[in-house]
Amino acid sequence: MAFEIIVIGTSLGGLSALRVLLGSLPRDFPLAIAVVQHRYKDFNNSLSSFLQQFLSLPIKDVEDKDPIQPGKIYLAPADYHLLVEPGYFSLSIDEPVSFARPSIDVLFESAADTYRDRTVGIVLTGANHDGARGLSSIKTANGLTIVQDPASAESNIMPLAAIAATCVDAILPLAEIAPYLMNRCASVRS
Image 1: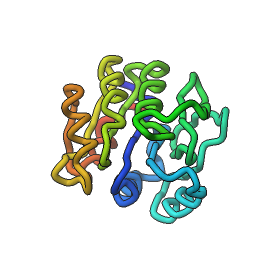
Image 2: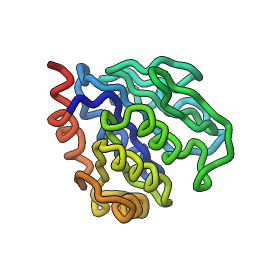
Image 3: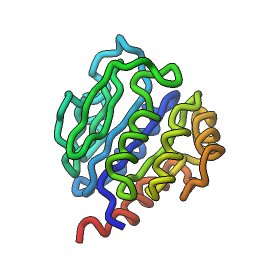
Image 4: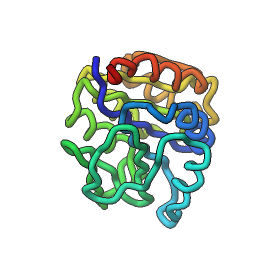
């Protein structure tokens, strides 16, 4: 399976989880990665700058119509939904979904609609149900679905909701997600 994009959603405890997961990926990781981290709308764009110091891959806050390029990490800006379109990202100020903007469900569903079975969806720690419906959409499109082991999550509500919503492909401790991705996505390099 040749995957093209990884979408990640997280909330409470996500900053630490993203440092571990994204920081474990090598500089030559071949896929584009889009991330929704719930945060307050007044939160400035320093999150990407903070994370960059722990990462080998470049990370940036998405601007509307940014092209989707492999080997880069794209972070949803505060107070905007991030959507995947064919070959680029778009931003939206539509109403919050599950009390969140950016919404994990919005990102995941748009990725499933656009990249179908070439999508990898990952739900990490969080304290609400956002992402459960979106991960189900990725599974329905025959994409790869991964959930952080609730026992290793700072808040297990979001992982448990995702596991209840769909039959996920892998439930992994946080430290094992990056090696799993490198193994499953190696075919993209050849």
